[in-house]
Image (cartoon, rainbow, N blue to C red; front, top):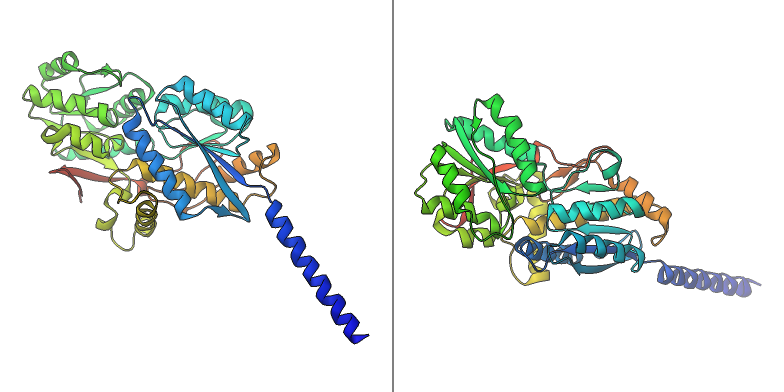
Length: 385
């Protein structure tokens, strides 16, 4: 009887182990849809975003017992294509969450599909939709008011009284201009221009001539990536000697390459990741930023040189953290709802750019810890104390 009992026990344990193995094998994958701009005028941002998401996969590719699979699509810098891609990922590929895209207009287009289909969106472009319109999205890049106010503080300390503005003729250009208007006045700084251009334009000579004629103490742009270099090139060509400023959307090697000497001395806000090795050991983002660099090197065979790849990596970290707290089976509408609820209730998640805290009624998760001021010095970003 004793032998028989032991045999039964072993058989039972073997069956239980086998059942567990089968259950794990049958556990649904968590599917991530990733949209970026691998071509078109926003590709100077979209390609780094792609490299950052690959670093995320290299960092960790499973969570809560689920293998993570990813489907990536190129929106060619076109918001309509971004929206179609989102619909395909949700309806055909059955993704549980979308991370994307490279430009604000594309992110807003995806947000509309995300809301309609009740699919969480982690936006890696700076996009904001208030109320119910944005209830299914969160945004990782620091909000324009947070970053522009840091620039205005620097302007004030440098004695700037007048500032010229030139930005994209789209949502990002609007966000930066509105933030500048709100913070410049209280600081005693007058905004003397509001010039605009399209991302695909090849010249801003007319707009810059108007700005130079006003003789502002400083110029700030609401631009991004390679097209963002145009105003600085034009200012240098016309001999402008005032101070030059930008935003975190310019921290990109292609911008530095194209801008050359015309952008030397530029001051801009950015996330701590871009100067991780210059941060004190006490800064919680230093450790995560260095882990990001290791994962990026593993995935791409080179070290990161931009700020944008770190946003998509932070998107991956946010997805991992939220999924680890989400109950249910991926691939179901109920799981997408639960995952969205986990994302918008994230608390003190340390990333490369920020320590993220989200609320259901607030798209952004960053605070003052997410910004530092850097200066472009002979092609290298240096931390400004």
